Amino acid sequence: MSEQNETAATPTCWDATLAFWLLRGWLGLRAVMTGLEKYAQMGKVMKPWVDPKTGAADPGGAMVEASQKVYALANYSPIPQSMQDKFAAEPLLPAFMLKIFYVVLGPALIVLGLMLWLGIGTRISLFAQGLLYIGLTAGLIMIKADDGVAWLAIHVVLIAYALTLAKHNQLAVLKKW
Amino acid sequence: MASEFDFSRRGFLTTAMAAGAGLALKSGAAENAPAAAPAKTPPSNRIRYALIGCGEEGNVLLDALLKIEGIEIAAICDIWKYARDRVQKGLKRNNNIDIPAYEDFEELLAKEKDLQAVIVATPDFWHAPISNACLKKGLDVYCEKMMSNTMEGARSMVKTMQETGKLLQIGHQRRSSPRYRFVLNYLLRDLKLFGRMTAANAQWNRAVTPDRGAAKAITMKPELLAKYGYEDMYKFRNWRWFKKYGGGPLSDLGAHQIDIFNWYFGVMPVSVAASGGVDYYKEHEWFDNAMCIYEYKLPEGMARAFYQVQTTTSAGGGYWEYFMGDQGSIKMSENPSITQLFREANAPDWAEYIQKNYVMLKKSAAAPEENVKVDVRESKVLETYALPVGFNKVIHQPHLENFFNAMRGKEKLTCPADEAFRSESVIHKASEAIAARRTLDITPADYEV
View 1: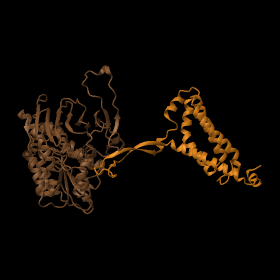
View 2 (view 1 turned 180 degrees about the horizontal axis):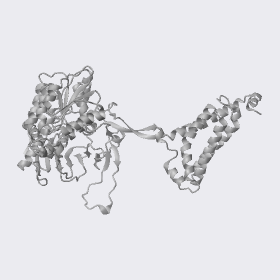
View 3 (view 1 turned 90 degrees about the vertical axis):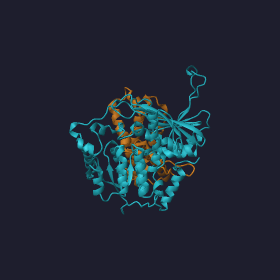
View 4 (view 1 turned 45 degrees about the vertical axis):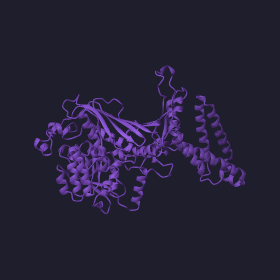
């Protein structure tokens, strides 16, 4: 049955639609924000020193260094360096594959999250996110990061459940796929 | 005892508030001048200035000057074509600034009609003639320290400043440093963090360096050197070591730091004992190494300050001023990595000051291992702190900005010539003490104008 016929034949089940929207929102947010955070780094900025007695900035011009989060393409870091070092030591994870995975991970999360939010290839987006999390899980199993494995498993379960509810999706730019 | 210097935070705030109310403020000396002319600034409020002296210090100042908004370099001057051309071409190449370059400062003053200020960075013996001529021409002047290689020269600068009512800022740049002002205004004066101040210690030690030379192609002709008071090219290039031109290492390096003794203690010393000699560099007139001890009568009691300048070793970890009290101490330096604070083991806790961002804990006091304790009278290991404040400008920029802001009536000079003269007089006195090989008393008559 075509999607058009399916939509026409099935009355809207708003309980399932709302449930899907929640999953769509959360999984999209999770992917986009996780991807964006890979471009963030804590930088140092100078701010005026404030006199605690008067609450005013020092008239002499004294400044204090403060930490400030900065987003920039140059700051891209797919996963923490300590984890990269562990993956690099794994014989079952070839260097070229790791390199491709690191290059793709951040942009892919952002793109897939946006696709899910906007409803462009919803099922493809969900499935691809699932594959990304499975890829990460494989690495975490090898380095025995069991907490991370369990954490990613929850994501995969949510994605699988979202896929089962995808047919109830509404407000999508492109309902096909 | 009242402080001889009025650089308190309250004073600074008062100044700033007065400036906000539209009052044009001049230096202390200028305020007392009979006819203090208002600073002439063009409608655009841009200040046009000339740089006289294109040597190393002139280049350091120029680097800072080019970072300051609202000012415009109009001309440069140096008797040495090599230095003059280098700066002129550099400005054109790097900054797209095409300005005239003069050999003679009098020609510059005659031809450049729309100047408001002059920056003087020549050898010391030219400071007084040039600054005095510029002040009399109606220009405000920023002159590098020392004011002069002689007391008479320095005194004449103060007198000219007072007579003309123009501004004369002396280049003791620490006086405008946000870090130095922070320590003085908040830690020393407001919090009295270090308790009763009992001693200070400062140094600037430098490794052996060969005398400077000049390739034949860029050597000035004897007639030109003689015209500007130099015996030969060697003395021109190494003027700091000769009494006719400069004040020696106590003046070159110690001037900054002995000035900090006076500024931070807030009083002038009452005596100086010193020793030094020409023991290493046989070609020089000024001593290569010198050590001196000043006595300060502080309101809470006597404090002594030891200063040493060695030009034969870099030992001792660079340049710093160490102020010591019975509750703590600070090793202050223009180099933030050298700056450290220490809390005496018996002093009240500084947790409150950490929380309020006056200080930062760097290293907790670790108990010494018993087997390394060699003397039962050994003091406890102290907690080490860092200064949390800094500034995001080049070193000389705040002092130059203070000068231009004073020209605009927005601030008061942090180091006007009368103030600098008092402080520098005790540096000349240390050189006298070395020559006399005895302790000399210092009285207000020594720094009377």
